[in-house]
Image 1 (cartoon, rainbow, N blue to C red):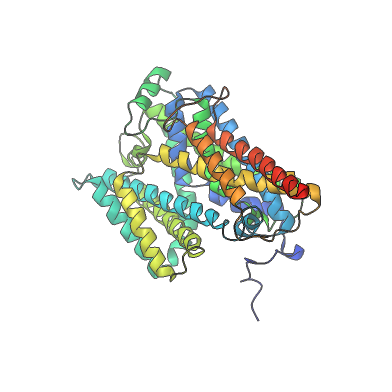
Image 2 (image 1 turned 60 degrees about the vertical axis):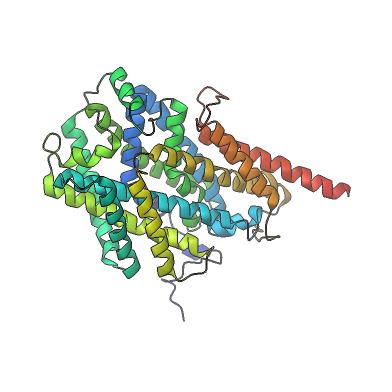
Amino acid sequence: MKSELLEDYSLTPVPPERRRHWISVAMVWIGVAIVMSAILRGMMVGMGLGSFKSLVIAYLLGEVMLIVMMGLTGFIGAKVGLSTPLVARAPFGSVGSQIISLCLAGSSIGWFGVQAGLFAETVNAYTETSVPVPYIAFTAGIVMMSTAVFGFRGLKMLSWVSVPLMLIVLIIAMIKIGQNFLPHDILVNLAKNHHPDPYPLTIGGAASLVAGGFIVGAVTSPDVFRYARRRVRDVFYAATLAMGVSALMHVVGSVLTMSTGEYHERLPFLIISPQYLGMGLIGFVILALAQWTSNDNNLYSAVLALNNIIRWDKWKLTIVAGVLSSLLAAAGILGRIELFLTLLTVGIGPIGGIIIAHYYLLKRRNGEHGQWKATRSCNYKALMVYFISFGIGWITSGHPYTIKIFPFSAFAFNGIISAMLLYYIVMKLARRGKKEV
């Protein structure tokens, strides 16, 4: 008989007796929010805007977008008790829902590349080696991949130690460096001179990057909230608390870069160098462990997502994903993290918009909100709406054009709202056409 402790209800609804208090659910999300990438995003937003007032507005916009997305998608998970892939089958179809898996795999592979690149910068900051950073990044990615292939489970235990230590170190760094910010003009000029990608220079762009950093978690929040009680307030309490912690992580990063003028790639230098915090070997070990354990989870998530599309042995998928991620690290994805976050925002946000529209604007009105079975293999209308919304988000993001359709020009918002409205209109017209026939 299978133990209840091992049952994760991957294909069935979570029963009422297995539901948890909202604080327990919030603690899971807080663990997800405390990551190095949040510090990097904070550094990018701080330097790009150069003003603490603009910074606060951007964080409010970005975090509110995430709270609303998490709350709406999370309540679906709490209501029906199903994971995101199963929830997505209703609007996208059983085959069309694999777009979720593809996006998740791509995001995890990208984050692996970012962390491997940062690991290379950490090694370079401590050893001051003459070996080119791309070579170190690729080697680091392969080594990290090997622990995932052979299943060194001790790394997962280390993450419970290294991640809190990293947060403590970064807060100490923020306090020690102080909050005497460089002048606005100097910070903005530094941002403009960063290559290959500039930092976000508008409030809307900054808010979208903040949202993009957690958009995967927001869209897939049913995975966690299916264990929450079926109360709207419980879901929104947990989402708000988690995003509050995320905002704190961003603020730490912003204070570091606005006080020193150092780019996000130089975060290890801030921790290790005697010029700033000067933690030397201890700082190196803490940063390295935090990056390594995070990447072990990134690769694991990528393989799970890919395995839903490609029926290979997991160790083979791990090698493929690990090599691809290491190549991205060597190619310098850390330096192009703004572009990566933009892709995440415009690529995954519309998925959440379609799921929200399906549940709240269509199914609930017809009393069908509990029926989340795929009625077709692929809903081509949903896919069409997804790609159109992706395009709207992309062309309003500044890649390759900047089209300001409202004052803040928050392209994350553009793609999500477009998906919700277009899906509702298209499905309504389709139903009306069937009735007339």
